[in-house]
Image (cartoon, rainbow, N blue to C red):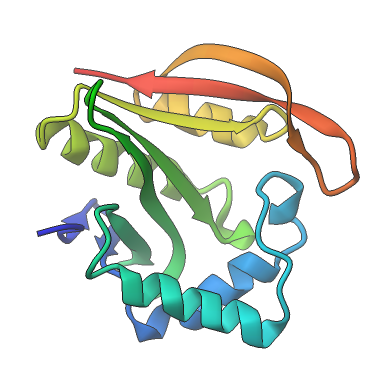
Length: 174
């Protein structure tokens, strides 16, 4: 079964469902997050359709996807997912996003740790992540979740302001 329910002390990670749409729309629409992550440039109706499509594809996808839920109030605060799988070399790439208003509380690191541990326990040799070099908090999150910095490539991501930033690469093994 893909995307089994995972839990930490403060969070539940579960499959997407209809109740996540508003939170996911808020993430896609937040200009502060778009400084670090590229989201599709869509109208509100197109964004909601995109979110619904992502949720509908969870059942058929080979990629695991979780909504990140705060236990204390059952609020959806983000998502984390496997974005690519390299079967030949037995590794996968994970991406995550937390609603900006919840940054700095350790939720991303908590989610990344439990998901990467699950993936490694499931048989992957390595789990990798990357982030825009400007997103210093994400770099710290990956290190706190047990990842090591593998490298940096300059001028890989086009930023909202038209400038290019480098990408930092991280990985975790057992």
